[in-house]
Length: 577
Ligand code: FES
Image 1 (cartoon, rainbow, N blue to C red):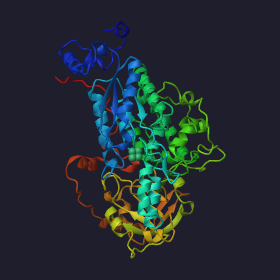
Image 2 (tube, protein in one colour; image 1 turned 45 degrees about the horizontal axis):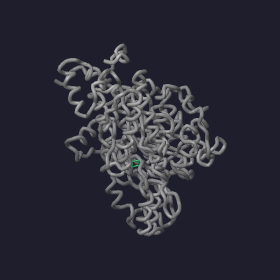
Image 3 (cartoon, rainbow, N blue to C red; image 1 turned 120 degrees about the horizontal axis):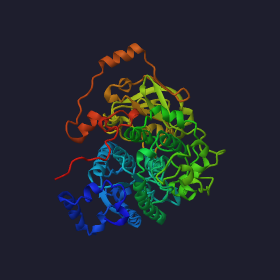
Image 4 (cartoon, rainbow, N blue to C red; image 1 turned 135 degrees about the horizontal axis):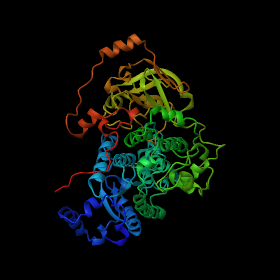
């Protein structure tokens, strides 16, 4: 052991690599086949790099290269970096939905960190579900952890205009269905949309979660917005590698950073960036792992009055590249510092105030001034009522204001196949005031709670120029989507929640001001429909899907598996031989 390391408290990794016996021999000897010299095991921090690299997750396909920059930083700071793969969740590629696997990936992350001899971990990921899954897993172990995200793609381009991931897909596909765009043009737009490495560059769920990671204090400043191809992201990865070594020495863990106040900051940040509704289930799940009491109602209580200052699609005009050049997330925090707990701790070892104090805004069009917000009150609204006793959510900033107080007749689809089969049929009894109701898309029902809540409108209404209707479901919606869409209805229809009981022609009222969602039938009628309702047998009788269906909690609890809530720490008491 070197003189530098011999007087310090032994590191966790020394339980693997510090023993002068058979077990130590085994752990060290096999690692040495990678060319690691003896002094790698002399008590210097072993840093895991938890990498969700995959060519099946295109927004993570460059992460092996980025990991090399993390390694440079770890070596420079006197640590030993060891990269390891974890499950990767490609949002646009996985069926039936990547969300089905968020909790599985979190288990992979948790068990990998705990089972191997590391002292701290860099979470290298980026895409809608990989960021929350990595944070959930790391919180359940609670070793020092820090995030480096993939970074967003460059702005999409089509016919000289900027186009945004997801957001313009929905617009283009409705234009094709409404006869306003040719298929040839549609295909041309596809190539211009994703033209560099990185994550979706709208303020979709991936960008939301990387910005909220910064708001939570779990990454260094600018991690949320720096474009994937910008050399400064590589430098950020290098600095992050250096910083995790210090965090191990300081024993600065997720539980020291992820306090209730940190989550409240993230809820405020979600409003200020016009962030995704998916952040609701992800933050609730992360809080559950770290032991913070966060509720669905906190979202409305804390976030509802916060203005949206960031003018990004899908709520606004610009894209992540513009946000970064305008000063990025630190500039936004500076502008809204009176709303945030600026003393909240961050992975930098200093407060949010310290890490953002030099930030400046360089473009008031992208990060609006306080007196010219994109939306004055931009938080996520939580609805309650006899249609959603455990709650439902809506993002008013992405909705049509005139529809936020609305009563209409339900047009009911029993499941996604029913919706797809009938939505464009001429005989569908629907008009612009109808409310589209979709069942069977909750956590247990689909399974996995897919992003289908922003169901496309009937083509016969699109042809009349109708662009929005009230839509209600137990599903989620893509963070890149928009519309007057009520989501996450709990309990879900598959569990016999009131959503299961809605029939064609029932009147429903969406009352944003009163935070209500009401089905206009009598209590007696509700009870009689409930008594007649029968659960359907699940198609999933084995494997992970069965485990998921048996244990997934409802959206208002973050849709984690019930037995994963909380943490087990980092201690492993038994040897492997
Ligand atoms: Fe991965 Fe959008 S598909 S970030």
